[in-house]
Image (tube, rainbow, N blue to C red; front, top):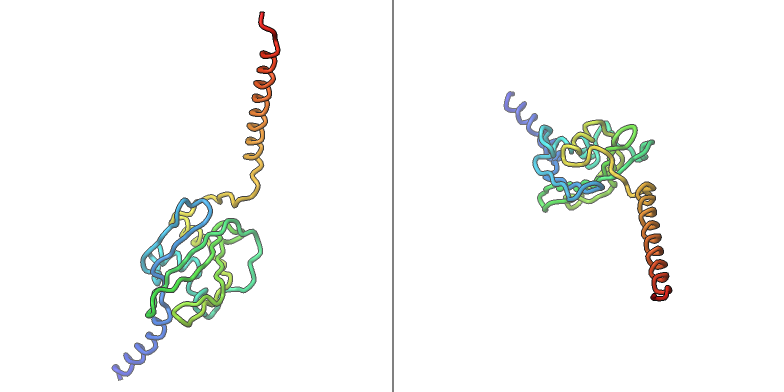
Length: 192
């Protein structure tokens, strides 16, 4: 009886562990980063940088269908802010697969991620994809990885910078015009 119970537990645990393969690495790019941030480790467990990020970013429900399903196909309301790209490396029998996810750590009211549905991995599986609404742990995990703690400019028009550049340019034009007219006056005067 005890042997049968152990076999039953092992049989039930095997599919769960086989379908819960996590990432072995993540690469993060985006505004305010001078280089690609790389995180290695075990993405299947929390307690390390990669596992914490995978958990906070909704990696597992975005890749594998989960019940209850926390993913949504509709973009959450609110402002997203700067976007960071996470490329997850997922090891498998046929080699590594790459899954792209976008993170918005400064989104309001909550940080979110987006994973495009249908990304191919493991040679035949497809991501569930969609939007995942995170919490402060998503932002904290990204900040711990090296993402700036304050939202960098997303490339919008910077009035202050262009105002100063315009004023500096105008000053240079005035100095050049003054020098040019002063030089003409000196040449036009007869020598005594």
